[in-house]
Image 1 (spheres, rainbow, N blue to C red):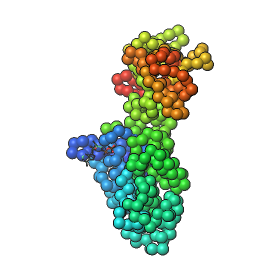
Image 2 (tube, rainbow, N blue to C red; image 1 turned 45 degrees about the horizontal axis):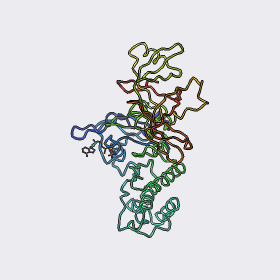
Image 3 (tube, helix red, strand yellow; image 1 turned 30 degrees about the horizontal axis):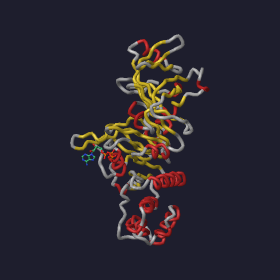
Image 4 (cartoon, rainbow, N blue to C red; image 1 turned 180 degrees about the vertical axis):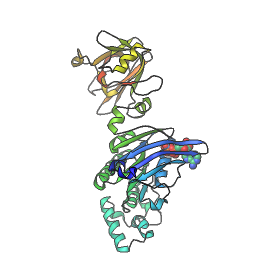
Amino acid sequence: NEKTMNNTTEHFLEIDSLSKQFAGVDALKNVCIDVEEGGFLVLIGPSGCGKSTLLNMLAGFEEASSGDIRIGGKSIKELHPSKRDIAMVFQSYALYPNMTVAGNIGFGMETRGVPKAERIKKTAEVAAMLQIEPLLKRKPGQLSGGQRQRVAMGRALVRDPRAFLFDEPLSNLDARLRVDMRAEIKKLHARLGTTIVYVTHDQIEAMTLATKIAVLRHGEVQQVGTPDDIYHRPANTFVADFMGSPAMNRVTGTLQRTQNGLELKFAQFTLPLHQPSEELLARAEQSGTIDMGMRAENITHAQGEQAGETDFGTLDLTIELIEPTGSDTFIATRDGDVHFTARVENSLRARTGEQITLAFDMSKAHYFDTDSGERVQ
Ligand code: ATP
């Protein structure tokens, strides 16, 4: 049929109009996501948005109310979890406490009747890959959190599945170990090339690992795109606010025609628009209300070089808070109800309560419809 004929690697894993109701609650609403073969899909969204429900449906632990899931063009919806050829790595690791590390890794192969010699070979291979060879004889209770996480991954890896599912695998690790394991997972993915679906709360994990990110809210997909799309072209104010730290600055203003183009007015301030689209020009003729968004890294301390550049607008605001992070410094500023966070060089000498002139790179501004929150430009 047409589906299988068009079955290119772009549609290796197809989540097709998937919905799930739990006793009247819509946990997932008409979710559609395609993942290419070897892709790394990250599911992200606030607590209760349906991430785990979706992952559990892919694994086969939860039944869909409607819709389909296909791998390589074939529906897997009716298949028992053990027949899906998908391996899941749980947040809790779910290791057998009385078995050794080698036993834990080999257990799945044993139940599938893989001969002993092959089990030993495969376990050794995976242990080498994860650098846990010295731990093979230990029990889970004798391992650190990071080591347990590796063992849990090892158990999935020996299966050599068509896809891996990761359910917040790093959330029980401390900050440093998280960063290390994140890099390990990325390297492992590059090496194996196996398709991964990965659930996380952590936007840095999403940005660094994913080839594709799906942002969910109340069971609905808000946007599916590359990390670059999600960060630089958020589809609506929810995605804009959710991704990025510090959160994107946003302000509601009015668009007004000027001799040269458009400007945005809010409170006593005015900022020029950079290359406004036809849509924005038309909106200026109507109500003119618009939401403007700008990330902290596109607002900085005004210096000589921005003067006279048409892409820049400047505002004078009062410094409310200074947050050095080491490499960068973030400055929270305010004037009445207007507030913006800017990223400045950490060498800048500034004090709270002082005035600062901020330069806004208007070529990086985002515009959203004030009512719907949908992206306009
Ligand atoms: P978290 O990040 O907190 O783990 P999540 O995004 O994974 O959240 P889900 O666990 O998928 O969210 O839950 C989605 C919605 O479905 C929530 O409103 C939740 O309360 C509901 N839900 C999940 N499982 C069940 C269940 N077995 N019975 C009833 N409601 C459920």
